[in-house]
Length: 188
Image (tube, rainbow, N blue to C red; front, side, top):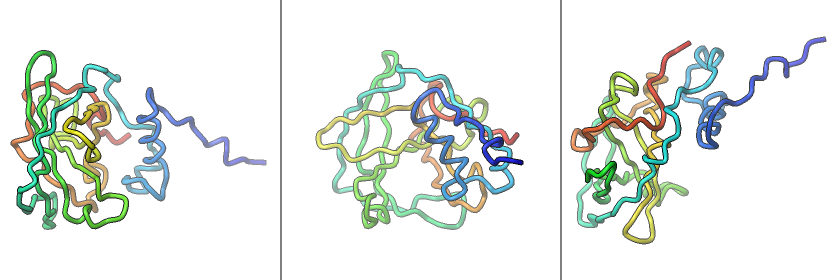
């Protein structure tokens, strides 16, 4: 007699976030992977968790910013606006990143508070995806926000070309290695 449970592998991950991501990628209803790639999927490759990359940033809101068409990996344009500018320190250096708010999300139940932080860094193309990574955040009540780069993830178009992913604006380049979050995806 055969049992389906013999095929079950434990969900890999060092942190709860990593385990959540790996569980999502294994779940056929939520995974961005193609069904072929999902069959051989063991787990995403993450940098080791590093508390250096959990930082508090000052948020300077830009309420008068206009919506613009952010280019994507397809013909689609994503209507975004700069919600604000984040200023923070890593290893004694000060950096700025624009954080974006999508027009569509503002009108979608459950996503009204959603903010999008795309970024590029010096691991792109070698240890992490060449096109940059994303972090999801929520609008804070005050003027500071916690950025956990350990939650940086690859755009879904990395895993499946059916997805249309915003292209990270060059202005959001950090001239250092952010060795946190998801690494480059290698099919097994």
